[in-house]
Length: 140
Image (cartoon, rainbow, N blue to C red):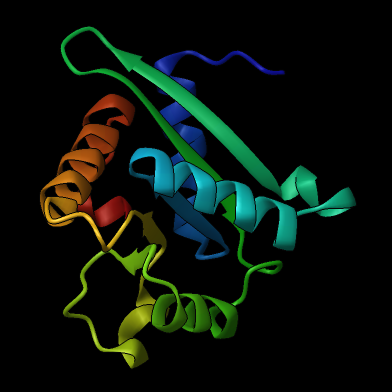
């Protein structure tokens, strides 16, 4: 376990995302947490688990948030597209983005599509993660 300052955490997340080789997974609610567990078990088991990081952060005004960083080499775009089209629990940063444009994204939001408030919850979770970890849209 490693403890970082907020600045170190922000730099670690930004650094990994800027390489284009990492996903930022943001779980929303219980379904999102279940999907993170599924992805970790299926694509990051064994030695690959070293490339899957849970990051917890706190902010005095916005509370706590949890995100995951996962190396894209273990969860390639072809698999993400399958998850995106086959699972009601996974969406890209913008459901209006055509699948061919997913390659430009580094964020996967994990939420239940069955929840009538899903869109608001996803927006709130993404916003909270950005505030807690000091990220900007350009980082994503």
